[in-house]
Length: 277
Image (tube, rainbow, N blue to C red):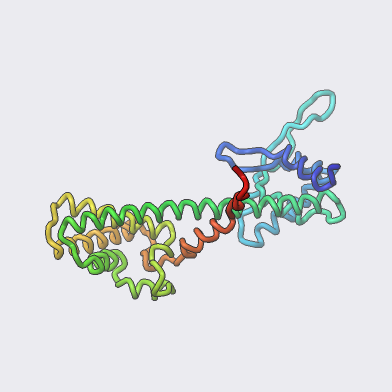
């Protein structure tokens, strides 16, 4: 048996629209009846309260409640334009939170939009994490290629070689970078880097590899100097673009922590029955 919450949720799903870029939105005129309002005038008062609530938290109401027009049948088949609104998911949530609490539809809509908003937050977080995980793997792979190119160039002191790259990009050593960002000494800097910082380091790594091979570098001293120079050039590019210097970018949760969380949430298959064929 379908309960009242399911009925409201089903109705809200039915009147939901999807924009060309994949975003969800609702029309206020459709939402009016779904939330139990017979009078547009009363419903528009709720919209105005929701807009005020939106503005009070520093969010532009125009981005969540976009005024438009809708053709409404006025009798004898005549169609007349009437005010309407395109509403974002967050706009609908605020609208439900400012609606008549005595209406069952309002209480159900509050729960529906709260759940949908939380689901989207989780989805957005997962997408950001996925991009960061992919970029971290790319950096690891490219670092291996850099190590091979450095070895061919005659590098034996790899710690010194890599320190030169960090010094060029960050204008400080690895110990000081971690201290500045509040990263534990045992943690890998790039495991705690966000996408912008990973991208900067990936550019440093790939360009150093290319330059070592292109310039046919065959001395450790020259290879170390090359790595420092490339790091400095990447830093200059970031500065020219008005970007945040890498040492000023905040540290992120460890990649290893995210990977452990993913494995834990994925779980594992139960052990097969020993008697199974």
